[in-house]
Amino acid sequence: MEKWSVKMADCIVLGRPTLNYDRWSYDNGVVMAALLGLWKKTGDKKYFDVCKDYMEKYVYENGMIRDYRPYEYNIDLINNGKLLFDLFDETKDERYKKAIFKLRNQLYKQPRTSENAFWHKKIYRNQVWLDGLYMEAPFYAKFIKIFDTKKNYNDVIRQFLLCRKNMRDEKTGLYYHAWDESHSEFWCDKKTGLSRNFWGRAMGWFVMAMVDVLEIIPEDYRDYSELKKMFLDALEALIDVQDKSGCWYQVLDKGYKTGNYLEASCSCMILYAIAKALRLGIAVGENFEYAVEMAFNGIIDEFILITDNGFINLNKNCAVAGLGNKSKRDGSFAYYISEPIVCNDLKGVGAFIMAAYEYEFYKNLW
Image (cartoon, rainbow, N blue to C red; front, top):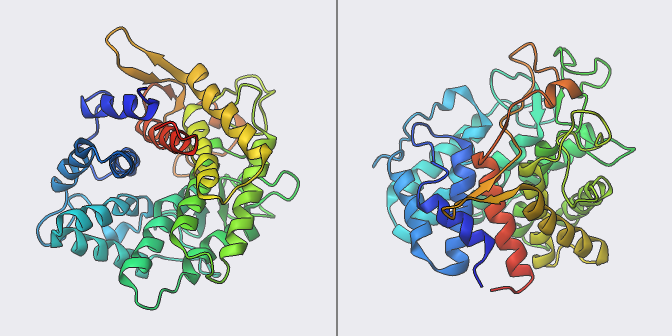
C-alpha cells in the first residue's frame, strides 16, 4: 500500500512543488528535514540525495554557508543546521561539521532577553517568537548530544520554560505568537508585552520543537519531566480547539469568526507532534489517539487534492505571518486572516510529509 508520506515526497523529488534554490531558507529546511526523516525510515537514498544536492550548493569546503549572514542574528537561519548532522554522519565530509560549528557560534552570541531567552532576530529587539523555538532548539539539543562533552541541556530547556512563564494563556493553555520584553512594540499589549492572538502555525512550530527536543534529551535528565508535562499540556490545549473536521484554524480559538479558515500547515504540524508523541510513548491515552485519527483523516479530506497527472496539492496554507516591521503586521485577527492563502507552501508540504510518516509508523502501516 502506497503511503501519503511517500506520495508527497516523490512529488518533491520530481520537482513539484519546486524547491527554492536561491536562498538559505528555513522553509526549504522543513522539506529537507522531512525527506531525511523519510530516508531514515525507508532506506530509500533518493530522499537523502535531494537534500545533499541542495546543501552542496550552499555549504563550501571551509564550512562557510552561502547567503548566511550571522551578524543578523536571525534565529530562522539556524533551522537548516539540523540537516547537517545527518549529512556529516553519512558522508564524513568535514564541511558539514564546520558549518554546524559556525551555526552554533551564532547561538553563543545571539542577543537575549534579561532572562536569557533568545531574541528572534537582531532587528526584533527584546522579542521572543514561538516560531524561533523550532528553528533553534532541536539543532541546539542535537549539537549538545553529539559534540558537547558536558551534555548540559539546561539552556535548551530554559528557552521553553521561559515561553511558558511569559507567553502561555492561563485560561486556554494556548500560547501567544510572540512576546516583547520591553512592552513597546505597536503589536503588543502594553501591560503584558504579549501579541493579541493564538496563531495556528506559531503553536505548530512550538509543539514540533518540543517533541523533537524530547526525542533528543535523555529521559533521566533534570527538567526533562517538566518539559514533557509542558508539552502534553500544550497538546491538550490544542485538542480543546480542534475542529470537528479534525483540523485547526488559522486563529486557533476563533473558528466561529467570519473570515477564519482551517489552515493546512498548522494542522499538519500539530498532527506531527501528536503522532510522534504517541509513537515515542510520550503521549498515552484515548484523547490523543482519537485526536490523531481525526487530524489525519481531516487533513486528507480538507486539504489534499490529487491532480490528473498524479501530483499532490496541499491547499489552504497561510503563506506567511509575522509581527512588526510592517505597519499592518499588528497581530490582530484581521491581520492573520488577511495574509495570502496558497497551495503547496513548502512549510506545509514539509510538515505534511513528516506528519504522514509519523502517523503511518505509529499505526504500523509500513
